[in-house]
Image (cartoon, rainbow, N blue to C red; front, side, top):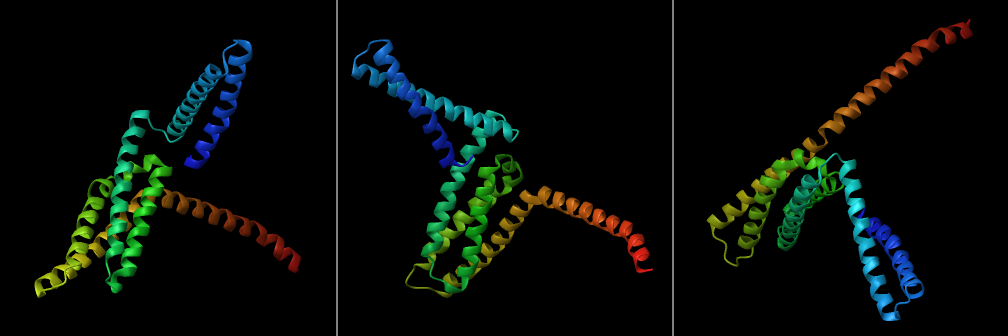
Length: 218
């Protein structure tokens, strides 16, 4: 579920609940205004937490995961988000104009995979090579490249290293593209299946209509 929507629902339940707790504490239990306020805050916090837990459980069940699996995926997604942020900041410091398009494409792919997994956590298992190998390689290479590219004096060896690093990053971009494709492979197969069924249905309809058209032409 969208984080903003989840917080909105939690507040929608917690705030009125806190108000009702205050009214009950003040009028029904004859507590002081201060104690009623404390009870209302505690009640609202409990309702907010309970709603958060319920929404999370609902999200987990919807995607066919156990709570333990979901917590494991969330931890890895948190780490991945930090790595992607590091890569983004690093790539922005690189002034090599010719590789700008490649860097933009790389960031687009990284964010797409992260967003896809965040909204459909079960896809994480199909993207494990990305999260446990390819992403770390991109972090390391991009940071080393940025560091070397900032050096004022560039020898032939340094320039050669920069070229090789750019080429490797380009290869990693293609690898990440394959990672994304792998995560979407079943959806693509399902789409092809649905397209084949739709085409067969259209062809059968055309075959059934042919006799009627020929009769009308006579």
